[in-house]
Image (tube, rainbow, N blue to C red; front, side, top):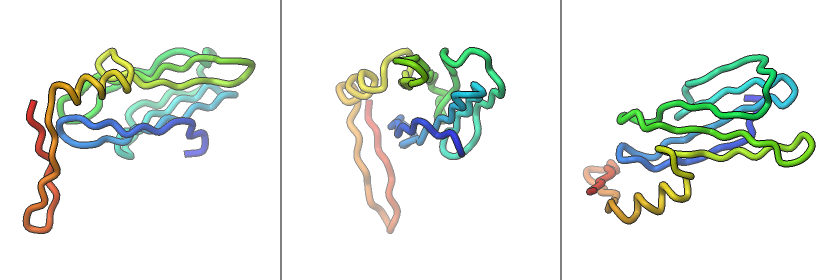
Length: 114
């Protein structure tokens, strides 16, 4: 990963997923990794801004990375989960679910009630 520009940790009902995004700002290349596995790869994109949509987790939750120019050749990257900003999604999730980590027989289990 040479052009890594953003990393997010997203807590879903099946666990925490790591999303990594590479953006080649000269070539327009975009690569999305979910839990280390390549999900999206686009080479030589002429448009440097835009969106990349993909799925995360066992429930195939919709995720979108927004790429926006902020000034000159600087870019801002934001993640949406199910159409909401990551912050808003996590706030809503904490209101509607309870989550525990249960340590049993030397293993950790994530329990989510919603």
